[in-house]
Amino acid sequence: MACEQWRGKLDAYADGELDPAETRGLGAHLPGCSTCAADLLQRVQLKRSVQAAGRRYSASPELRNRISTVLATKIGASKIGASKPRRPMGWYWQILAVPALLLLILSIGVNLYLGRENARRQRVYSELADLHVAALASASPVDVISTDRHTVKPWFQGKIPFTFNLPELQASPFTLLGGRVTYLAQTPGAHLIYQVRKHEISVFIFQDRIFEDRGTDPATLPSGPAHAASFNEESWTQNGLRYFVIGDAGAEDLQALSKLLRDAG
Image 1 (cartoon, rainbow, N blue to C red):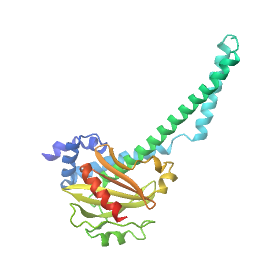
Image 2 (image 1 turned 180 degrees about the vertical axis):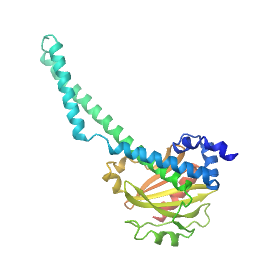
Image 3 (image 1 turned 90 degrees about the vertical axis):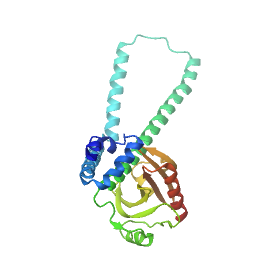
Image 4 (image 1 turned 45 degrees about the vertical axis):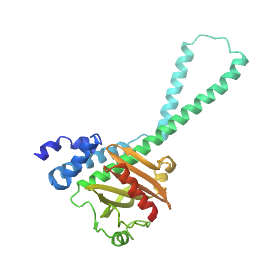
């Protein structure tokens, strides 16, 4: 009966389109239902394959420039052929037109830059949300199972090209379930999973420079709280590492866990 209630909402869950209450309900159902977890994992893998295929065949900057040049030439030629002779503008209006044109070009350039950066930023968050969902839907969400930070941290040595510190969780509501190696932009990073009141929270740690390598300015990745799809998020940079905390737990829980991680770093 529970499967019938949730099966029709797996696609919306994978796309982050469920409301917070349904997201928490389905998230609580998945760990105990291998059928729904397997179906969800298949959907997430298909979604990531489609995203990768879409980026693989994007037009190169050289091709875009060639098309723009051809179009500009043809449009300019058609306007010349159809236009009637006009009286030349006076020198006064020409002087006024130059700064207005420069301002227009600058405005268009800024908007295009911000649009591209926003698309890249959203792509990063979408990939992290997919990794979070895929891990929870997997039969083995972590490769090293331990609540002891002194066991989990050494396990990553030699598997990722950096080290990090983990907080002491005594007197806190959080439990460390374990960790695994994950990949973003084909670069390895750490994926830790914490639990608080039956909610799983993913902590992703990557070298900050990989976002520059993939064309995303780290400065455009917001620090502090954020909201992506049906999940709350926290993100910050510390000691050359970029931290992402994502989950369907309350924003105050993510902020508390983020503070523990910052203090440990």
